[in-house]
Image (cartoon, rainbow, N blue to C red):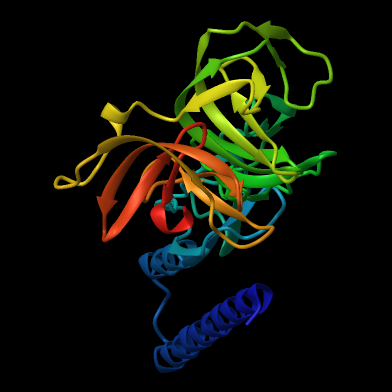
Length: 342
């Protein structure tokens, strides 16, 4: 049933009820007058009839709307007597502000009346959207600032940037405005970057080595001198298998003839309680699949940090027996299972 039909039904019922009551009242009056036509009318009876008429039933319909005339709560139907005070309690409407009232009256002034209470949704807290280069931690675009009403839906569509691909998102890209500030950060990565790993290592420079502010720069930022040691924070593996090392505020391309990379000191390697680390100094060769590369790791059973060609000559500096497998530490690379060496 529509709201309009609901009103018509209520008012129609009230009209019919009043008509019936009036008809009954006058019918009784006719009987009284017919049966007692020889009696003079009494003033107090007339007064009582007038009082009854002046305090007849009345209805007030209370409607709740927003500022777009949309119903936001169930209507209330309040009954009373003409001339009496209208007593009612408004519905609680969290996140809304009352901005206007139509047809308000403190008294029942008519048989039928309508009051409309108009509300407006409160503003939600803003949503900040950032677009960040994942590896170098700088903004690819100025942040977006989104606003809306509490409870309204929002959705962020990540834009595309030349030479970049989307890698991860923190926060929500789809949800609702609330009373709390929300932050969404969308991370991008260079398209030809295969993997970036956090790395704690030290780079020992053997020859003059150019360093770059950014991996894609063509002009060097400075030259690293031989016999210097630098702390490494990240390792980048590109699709073309180039390895780049982040030294804090600049990058160097890894070249094994110009530098030595120690991924950790032997004393800091985390091992199972019963495992015993043995220092060695042996040469070996990678034994994998012809023309393929095998992965090496930052620790035994650790994170992948790079790949090395089959047949590559390497030098091992330590070994450890874990889970029925010998792991070997390769100087300038990382850890590799012994069955890939010969």
